[in-house]
Each structure stands twice: as C-alpha cells, then as structure tokens.
Image (cartoon, rainbow over all chains, first blue to last red; front, side, top):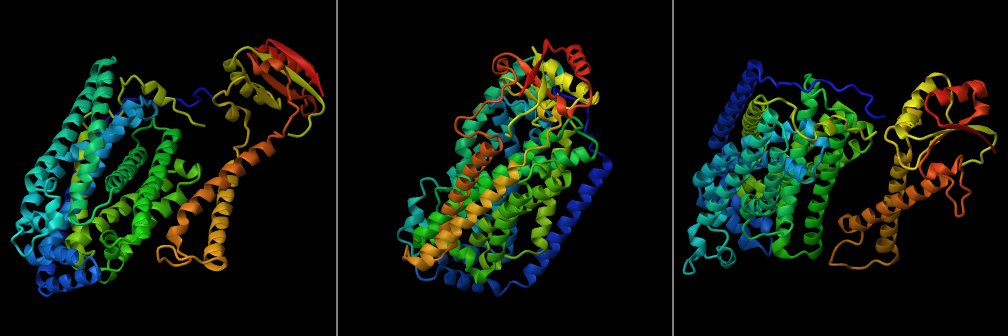
Length: 448
Length: 175
C-alpha cells in the first residue's frame, strides 16, 4: 500500500555517552592487560619452540616445497627476533588488515550506492559513512608494524634472498622483486590509505554540507568522487590483498586472491553495517529504518556470504584438482601442516561464514528479525576474523600459533578503538541525511 | 485455476490509486473480494487484499534439496560404483569434485521446479482459457471482481459501495 506506515521524525542525533566511552576504555584496558599477560607467558615459555617450528614447517613442505617451507620457517624463527614477538606482530597485522577492510568497505558501500543512484540505503547512509574514519589508525599501525616487525612477518624483506652469490639466494622471490621490494611496498601502502581516506573525506564533507544547504550539487559531486573511488578501489583492493596478505607466503600465489580478500572484506563490512543498524534501532535510534531496509540488508549479507564462499571454493577447487606442488602447499599447510593446528580454524571459517548464515538467513522472516540478523552478522564477523587468521598465521608464526590471551587482547583493543572512532563520527552529524535527494524514496522503501 | 462458476459483480475503475484505497474500505464493510485485475502490478495490492503470502519459497527449498540429493547420489553411484575413473589421482568419491555439479543440479531443479509449480498453480497449461471479467483490464482499466455467492450483502448495497468508492461502472458477469 502506498505507504501505510507513518514516517517517524528524521531529526536524530546519536549521542556518544560518557558511559559508552568508559566501557570502551575499560574494554581496551582489559585487552591491553590480556596482551601483556599473554606476551609474558609466551616470552617465558617459548625458548624451545623456534627450532620446533622449523622442523614442523619442513614436515609440512613434505617432498616438494621443502625449500619454500624452510624459507618460511626461517622467517618465523631463524632470521627475526623471538617467536613470541613474531606472534605479537602477526596479531597486530591480522587485526589491522581485518579492520582496514571493514573501514574501507564503508566507503565502498557508499560509492556503489551513489554510482547506482540507489535510494533505499539513504536512510542509514551515515553508518557506512562513519566506518572509514578508522582508516588512518590502521594505516599508521600497519606502517609502524612494517618498519618494526616487517622482517618477522614478510619473508621477502630479507636482503640475502636477492644476492645471487649468497647461499640463501632465492630465484623465485628475486623474480618478484620488481613489485615486491621495500620502497615500492611502502609507496603502495601509503598510497592505499591516502587514496581511500582522501576520497572518503570528499564524500563525507559533501554529505555534511548537503545536510546544511540541500540541493543537488553535493549529490552530483558524491556520485563523481564515489565513482572515482570505485575505479581506484578496483585496482587497490586487489593489490592491497597481495601486499597485506598474499605476500606473506612469498612463493605461493593465487590469481583469485584479490577477489577473495575483497569478498571477505565486503561481507564483513556489510555484517558490521547491518549489526550497527540493528543495534542502533534497538537503542531507539533510526526509527525510520523499516523492515524492508532490514530485509534488504539481510539479503546483502546473505548474498555476499555466498559470494565469498564461491570465491573461496573457486580458489580451492582449482588448486585441489591441479595438485601442483607449489600451489597445494598452501592448503597442505592449513590442513595437515604444523601438527594440524590450523585444521580447526580452517573449518570454523567455512561453517561460520557459509553454512550457518546460509541456513539461518534463507527465509524472509529471519531477515526481518533483529535477533536472527544479529546472530548471523556475529557469525560472519567472527568467522572472517578466522578467515584472515587462517591466511596470515601459517606463513608468519607457523607452529607457534595459538588462540590465547594475546589474540583476545588484540581483538578487544582494536574493536574498542574501532567502535570509539565510529561512534565519535556518528555523533558528529544528524543520523539521517535529512537533505539527501533520495531520502523520500528511502523513507517509503517497501518491498512487501 | 479452478473453473469459475456463479455470478460476479465487476467494478471497473479508472485509477490504480482509487482501487487500492477502495479495497480496505470494502473489506471493512464486509465485502469479500474475489480478485483484482490490473494492467500492471500495483504496489501493496497483495497486502490490501489480504492474500496469504506465496509459499513458493518452501517449494523452491524442497526442489533444491531434491536436486542436491539427486546430484550427489548420481555422481556417487557413477564414479564410485558403476564406472570408477581415476581423475587426477583423487578418490573415486571425493566431495570437492562433486560440488560444482551438485550446485548446478540444485539450481536446475529449483528453477524448473518453481516454474512448473507456478504454471500448475496458476492453471497455465498450453492454450489456457483466459478468465477475463473485463477485457479492458489488459489495457487501461482496473477491475475488481466480487463473487455474489460468497457475499451476504445484497447486490444493490455492493454496487452502491463500489460506485461510492470511485468505480466508473459496475457490471454483472455470469459464468
């Protein structure tokens, strides 16, 4: 029916209460304490594990990729500092990559909605709009981590690999040095974050100005810059995935990897957006978001969880079928390498990211129910942490990986910081973009 | 669709909005509406008429499940028992190899099953006899059919209500 529902007020201000701030600080402090305790425990009990790691990694390599595995193991133990420091660096890197993804997807979501001139998503547009404010934080963290812990994380940063006279010379890695060298890597790293963040500030500024003066100029500008972002992101989403994640296992490569990481980031970002919309609604905000919006968000999460699975499987099946030693080592390490410690996260990854949301979000009613949406979103958010865990940990910490206070601590610290930045950003503007030209359409969104 | 019998009152409207707003008022007055015919889909019409939601989703799920089971059974029997073949040194029955075909068969069964279900439940056999209360409902008019046998109100009352709510004409159709 042509809008039987009454439209609630669109004047809403999100309040970042001092209570919430206090809780976030406590959360961050607990996280920090966990990290310190965990690091202390690791540092005092890790003396013998380094040699153990090399041995295990060599086993994982089995007959073929033995040299490769020894190199990776060298990165984990022999070259850099102690293995517990590697584990700390790996954890920081993992969380930074994960939260970078969520943040940049906010911009991605806004941009394709502008390009498609979508109306339905306008009413909760401020939420994806707030996410990229965390980008500078992860950018700086990644830069520092690369400087301090780069040798522990990235095997290809070691100089002796490129010297043909050296015993440790690696022809394969040397062949990649045109792309994978420290100066170019740093240039790219900075370029990604500056590019993403700059384009976001343009959209954000236009959006805030639109609230003040209305009209179409800011909308048109947003469409243009959003499109520019999509072009930029089309390239940088792939290259950043190679740089941040794939280059850790320097010998191995997959042509699906850019897509794979984008799919992973995307569905996590959508789950975070949906979770935030639902949470805000439960706290009395975003009253103008109706069940049709929720169902469409649920569909987005559902569809892109399947898309991730599709890409995951496309990568897996080809490698599994072809069974080439230099490719299959990637899955062998995760399936049976390092004493099989990665098998559990490997399957948890599939269950939380595909089977559970697929079955739970299938019906229409479940996508309109807060509790079920929240459950599915949490499943995906946790699941994709494990997705990155399974991708980053074997190549960095190898057999010394685990899931203890350090992991929980870093998740907590990053999550609290992320929520802090996003909440602060949300509080800066009216929760509903009141002069957006498509707002009226969005308020009446009804998919029956 | 079952063969129609009996006597129907047919209200002809000029405007989709008018007919949409007439429906809740008629239903409130106790008129049971048989169906509304329109040249194009009207947003919110199903809700206004109080039609139950389609159950084709459940059918689709079951068709998909059937396709999934068929594919897995077929490949397990073929490659595992009837004619085992060594493909890339993999097990005869290896789930990852089966997934693409399982996926395709699931989609195929779901699609065909849904289309068939749709045709059957809507009586769309070849050469269907169209049920037209007023041929203009395929052009520019919005037509509401009310079955007299199922309504307690008198013909005059319903006709008057229809006219009051904006129907241009009210005709009688006997099957």
